[in-house]
Amino acid sequence: MRRKAKREPLAMNEFTLEEAVALIYRLAVLDKTAAKSGQLPDITQIGLVCGVLTMNDQIEVVVKFHDEIRQYNKEEFENQITLLES
Image: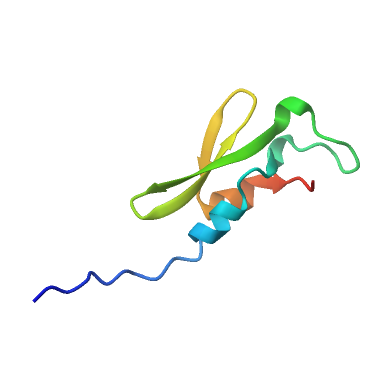
């Protein structure tokens, strides 16, 4: 008799697929390079959430900046990224 593998519940620091997909096409800035309040960040500091990546059953988001592409799990994203309002 076959049984389905029991999947562990998501940890609090992991994106659900719905959360990750909802971030696609949002503009983001790294907290360490964010401009002072009231000022807009430089265009080269703004990134675009451009994709969702699944590795080892963990969902991450992909952010394309001017000079690099980075991937973040939920905890990293919440600690290092600020989303810009459109």
